[in-house]
Length: 439
Image (cartoon, rainbow, N blue to C red; front, top):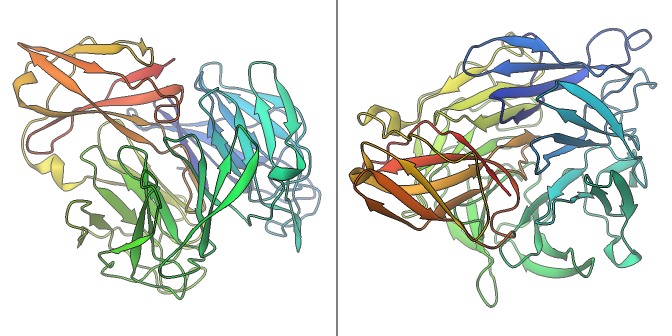
């Protein structure tokens, strides 16, 4: 791929934007290596910022119009790759024009922050560090419509660590599910925190999380010692409690998770020690109905520290990164078991956009066999966290070759932005997904 995909985002142009730290000597080169990989054509192209900017160690999320918002990152003046010196800069990348634009400064420097998109289209930036041992404790809010940044009130101020695992859930709160053992809820309306339940295992340092199908339940797996254990939290319960689910075959830290169109979760990469020691090269597939993890076909490269994984519109999974080893600049693509169960259903004439609370329609010659219609948001992944990953199944009906599905009205369940539209048949085989913009 020409570079190391330490950060990776799937764009609605079918490009994967990926970037790493400064490639050359920091005395002369002050800009991260940024490129795009088109999953349809295999073409890799340069996408560098036209100004000096090291976006390595930034937070990122996709905006409702499909642009990528990047917050914080690394101070390119230090001459080091990983020294924990944050910056206040933020940027937007436009995948249509392939252009970069600086956006307003953050309220404080951030290295390893986490971004979360809201139903109103704004983005919140949590956590990270200003410098080694100095936490970034405030919460910043970016409004892409007015291109303004503000820092929320003092009730929002809290030390939440580096790349906190944050997910917007259907009641409108944002769940912090890791990596510390105690979870927290953040209310974007009141801009304040409330404590949540503690994990069964305790702190899962460098563990992975995934927002499961329906967007109300979170899975966390691995991390810690490392551990083989995994657990889930259903936020719809009156008193949510973490409960254990099936254990992994392999204990691992530094892994990534991908929610697939059939609702199962793939955990990929990681290893048994930080950073590159004893890699686990066997992905595992978690079945939410049984809680069982099943080993899959192994990948060739070690995918531990600084690795990424993303669901592609054809139902495969792109796995890349780890800035160490002979295959650091190579990617691999995994084909899940559902791609070996027969022909795919097809989607014809899908809508380019839909409105929450409305309906979407498409034609399929295989409509009678469609068992699920699901919208899956583009992923934006780094350091074991992907806050943009979201899978929302739709209630649907079939009439002849026409499939009509209801689009949820709640922006907490279905925030605005670009989604992949999958039709899944009774054998679990997904279609190739067209892009649909949720307004």
